[in-house]
Length: 247
Length: 193
Image: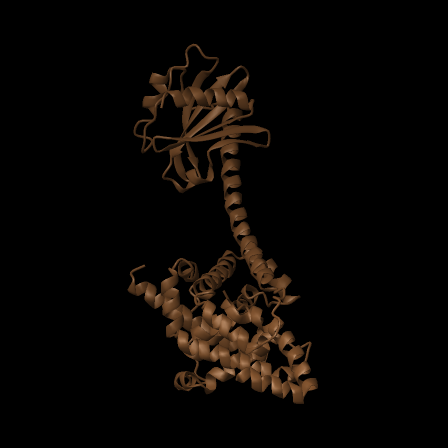
């Protein structure tokens, strides 16, 4: 960060930066994460100091009465703009925090996009899976030694789902098991990775729709499961229920 | 007895007293809502309740006396802070404190910008540590931090309060911020955070 930005960040955090510098800096903040973090830090620091020191000392009722009588007169309180200023400062901080959350949201979207890409390229491939078997007792041992974790696979007999096979996948450079299931003409990929991988945080629990793909994410026993399909959410959730029952 | 004298005075110069009463009303309406803020600021400057009360009392007395010279349209809040601050500087506690006043030229060397998320860490420090650091700050730096962060005066208001050009307010504020940051981060290291 150059000194030029440093001075402007001070003024920005103090709500003193005027146009056109304000717009220039805001454009810069959108592209420079270090300056954005710096601006957020300054606001937080300002806020902490404000919270620690404002109203730290209050006049006693006795003193207030003495002072009031020393300056005689009718004392109607006038409307102060102090709360408005507090509010506007808070609004600025909220806006900045929101933009950080948007960045976080963006990494979630990137991770989702990667999962979808993996699913699509698998389904489109001539050899979609490395281990072709409908037998869970074949598929599960195949991953042994390839992954730093193990997982349970349920018996699918009696359900509409069939196991097609499995392959090794990497989600944002983290090793993952990819299992491919079929239901009618649709296929569902289930990715399993370690919950301790930073990537796992990009898949919040629950159902998501993205680009017409149905995605369901859930945690179990230190692992993160993400099911993706071009089929219906109902199918994905039915498979999810079966998988969860085996965990 | 005091009332007796006052009412006798009123008898002699009723016109002036009427004017004074109107003045006092107008002054009270403007100044009393600022009491809590001014008191907080005074306590931060003096460091104790008794001196803070004296300082605020003297500020209000002086301000009321000078209220007729206060021109409407100028910033009343900054005007009050200015009286309080100047009163403090000439008080016993203020004279003691100003001995440690930094010279404007006394530059603290700029630390290399290490892309420090330290301010993020600072934000998590507990309030007691922040208060201690504020108390340790030189008065000149403490007052500008208080005026900006705590009393939330604009640069322009601070300039009016301290009788300084805006450019000086900005550079002094930035020096004070840096000094406070140093104090806080040394505390943080001390606490092994």
